[in-house]
Image 1 (cartoon, one colour):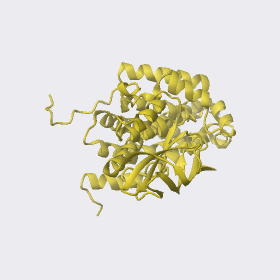
Image 2 (cartoon, rainbow, N blue to C red):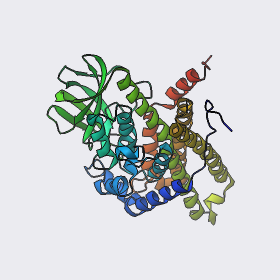
Image 3 (cartoon, rainbow, N blue to C red):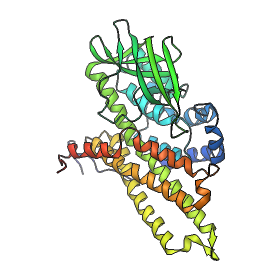
Image 4 (spheres, rainbow, N blue to C red):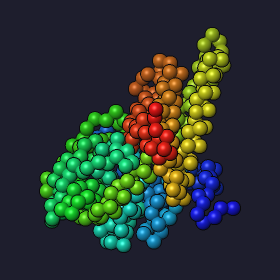
Length: 381
């Protein structure tokens, strides 16, 4: 039994409701987001598949998982959002779930939802009617946003530039940290407003597009100021980094499953190559790494869901561990496929590119190890 002042033990198991959500998302992705479809999509000019997003966000209702019911959402938690991200990682699905339904929504929840300027956009994002992004560079880590590169005047007109913002090209709403007349502030800006320019850049991960944003006296709506604005951004980045670990887990699981399947079918010297002891050891080692990654990712999701004071520690551990595991799994998948794994036609390269991009997103593993050392007061020698 725990007292009111104690932190409850983490629950790393999946509930029946979470497994039902997983089944629904996996069935949708199997039907509309198979590897051939993803490969075809990255060659188009669309930032994401709007029909897939509508089915995932609105029809299944995943866009509002983190939003309380009274504000138009599903009233679920980070645990359920983590399950969705696991499945999206397994499919390298080209949808802005992490950036919109997790990071942008968390930033709005950190403001005052009783204000119409906050409640309106939050309800629209929760129902899947549009997408939004927090206008910070993709590599920005929790607590590392730094001074805003955008300034706002007394009328709320924004001027400045933000580089490498994930999923900004397809977003309808930008949440822009800015330096206002009274200090730090957070503004909402419509991407179609005058003075807003979006410049697409070619990313490593073609399933998660990047863009530079330029503001030239663009009209903004004030959402929060001072400490509340700073806390809203930090909350969004912490939640995003913690749940990104679940996406990395999904990437690693697909890569191991695909490697096992292929090596069981590919024969050499009259026997499946997966029967060779050296390859068995490599896949067994990867299986153990993924088991540990699952525990770290689930712990981070549970800590965020319960509002634990240890959430920053759990997130730092998850990102420091899960990011390298996803990259290792993708590398092993390509190598164990031999020549076919190096081709554009095989989807393995999509998983490696997503894993490498995720390794930089929301803080590198080294950045999170430094944060962890400070959190637990264990400085490097």
